[in-house]
Image 1 (cartoon, each protein chain N blue to C red):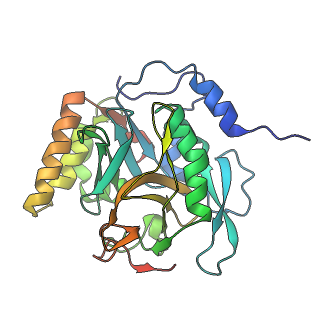
Image 2: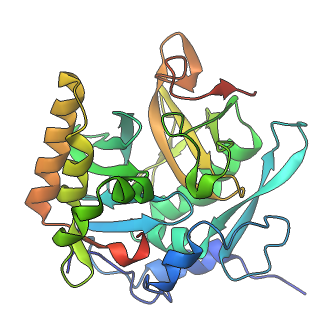
Image 3: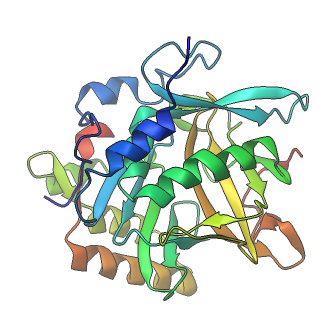
Length: 131
Length: 172
């Protein structure tokens, strides 16, 4: 019996997608959040054990990020839940929670840049998936 | 609402049930009968050098698809290449924590590869100079992230920082 090609099906289904808009996603297998402000090809620069920033291959502008260790981060900051409204929270606040434990000035600049991008995009994520 | 769900992709929103099962419903990579898995890739097992299977979840596949066709093709072609033709494999991705999620030992892996070409959003496929393609695999052999990073100028098979404590050890 012929098996269907899941990639072909996914490619076909992707035709029905509308224009790209900034989006965030919690991956439970990696316990990490990934978000994209643009869907262009990117390269990644790891800042520290918590965040990796994605930069456009064309313009070197920030186009996204990965935030790791969401479970431990929320355990370490139990009061973070006051920021959650209707189950959702600003991605920029999660970045700030990581940034405030960073002393390295170079890393802080990277945090500042990605936090600004997340604030400007007003990205939110459903943390019910991760806590 | 900024968080995007792909239309027509049978997307299933996250819900509180995910909390209880975080990282646990994939604990048996040898029996991927559950609907959690989208695809199983043949990968090099760094322990014995023989093939084993690394899975991608439906959830991850749907998320990748939100970035368009080139991202889907990257998942199909480049991830497959990286897992079956790694130039290096590192163990211990989460070295700054006491252990991995769920208290598991930190045996998560990072496959580093030099695929001959890369997919672009204009449909082109061209070499990726000065880049390595990394695939991150958790303890249950589920690939949860992949991306291009600048290669180490002294070892172009590895990402920058590979010798600076980023990983516990190199296993291939």
